Amino acid sequence: MKELKDRIRRDGVIKAGNVLKVDSFLNHQMDIGLFEQIGQEFKRRFADAKVNKILTIEASGIGIACVVAQSFHVPVVFAKKTQTKNIAGEVYTTQVESYTHGRIYDVIVAKEFLGKGDKVLLIDDFLANGKALEGLAKLVEDSGAELVGAGIVIEKGFQVGGQLLRSKGIRIESLAIVEQMDETTGTIVFKGDERDGE
Amino acid sequence: MKELKDRIRRDGVIKAGNVLKVDSFLNHQMDIGLFEQIGQEFKRRFADAKVNKILTIEASGIGIACVVAQSFHVPVVFAKKTQTKNIAGEVYTTQVESYTHGRIYDVIVAKEFLGKGDKVLLIDDFLANGKALEGLAKLVEDSGAELVGAGIVIEKGFQVGGQLLRSKGIRIESLAIVEQMDETTGTIVFKGDERDGE
Image 1 (cartoon, rainbow over the protein chains, first blue to last red):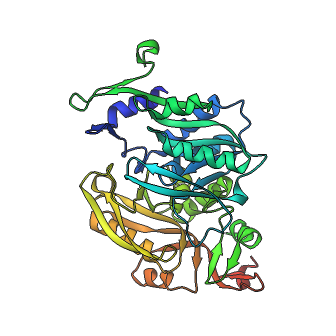
Image 2: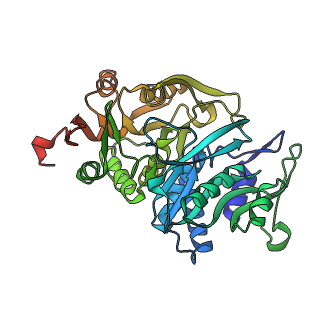
Image 3: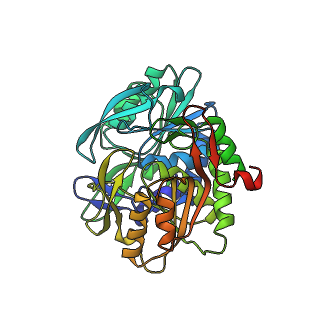
């Protein structure tokens, strides 16, 4: 998605440790007009999939998922990272290791909001080691719902997550796949750069 | 807002301890069509306010804020509850006590995304004891931005938050103010019920 890649090149900041900061438009401050374009692109890619529910994980996936959901006209469910008083006892649960936070979370979805008959699209801002997406896929599987795929805004193609999940047969659509990034020069190479002139 | 009150009466569940569960449409599963109506109503109420940024707090405020932002054509910033590797050192910070989780959070916003010249509308799903909103208002004040008010989906009128914040001169617009709710009968009385036939 050219607008997205251009925006990452313009406003993204590469930091030590393979960190790509895009918090000026994606996951701290959020450019809602860009999210609308992202939603239209996911709708185009998953037009055939009869999605009837979007599942994401708190926190930075939620805003993107809600705007994307407008293109699909479906509700969003977000998986929560800890059990709170407001969640009933009946939940699907799994554990997710967070690369960013360096800890393991319990991730839960109330059973009443996911189940047989649902055709679920996962949405998240990043795919790196794939742990969050793997956890969401497990929740969908446990619920008896059908996983139609995952829509990812930025995939770090040099980390294992994309390969891991695709090898399990999960359809992954990433709008920008970073193949290389260089902290010292600030340059980013996206998959497809050489092919389509993006 | 009649559609919202009707929805709360239909799908909300009253639990012991003054808990109003609305997680089938507001803060776990999210009805994006309803969020669009909520956005239009906040835009109507804050039409004069020249809002150029929306500030919310993770996690359940984010989805609402992003859809509301479409009515205002402004970016959203969400305050984060813990310091992560992806946030630069330069942050505004305050502490917020969570009623739901029974603990105190550090809440942060990167300085580059909030400051002088910003006219900020706060958006959140609930106003109860007001601690989260008070924290967000402090971040806005610390940044030198102007706080134009707060748009709240559901206010618990029998808790102190609304009175506390209004007494500080903050403009609060709540789309549904619960005055009483009864766990045994499942009945909810909203402010304005007797006046406007809602």
